Amino acid sequence: MTDVRAGQILTDNEFELLSYDKEGNVVSVRYNGVYVIVDNGYLAWSCTVPPLSVTNKIDETRWSRWVESMRKDVECTFGILKGRWRILKTGVRVYGVDKVDDIWLTCCALHNWLLDIDGLSDQWNDGVFVSSWDGELGQMDFNGLAESIPNSTA
Image (cartoon, rainbow, N blue to C red; front, side, top):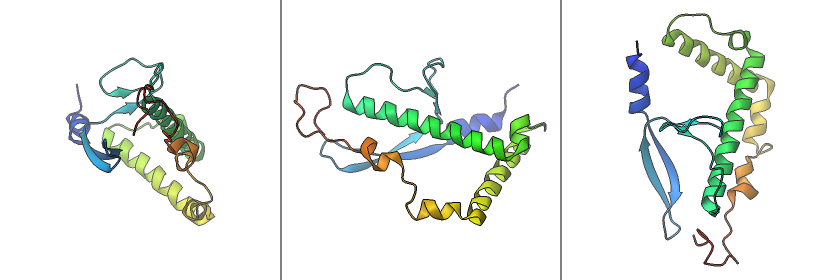
């Protein structure tokens, strides 16, 4: 038996990513569907997005590093929430997707609320913690690369 609600969520989800066109301008690209970021241990399905294991293109290497970084961040977030909320660590023992969603959202909301109370969210807003993509990983410097190298021109 399949959950119609879950199927509708997977196909009805729409999101937008920013990219560069050939002139270097930022453009918005819309996508439909849901994709699961995985490591290379998972099967290659149409909904899974693993990092590329072998590539010689700068854009693909940068993209693979970004996907791996995001996957690790999500895993760390799940670990933090499981450490804080016992119901997530021992397993949610309720029946129904709606109830599980409510428990998950409640744990996330309480976690964010506690970050505000502890003053830890201020450090994110003040720039104490900076994403690694604001630094070296976020830069694509093509200067000095030979044009014969794939993707060496912006």
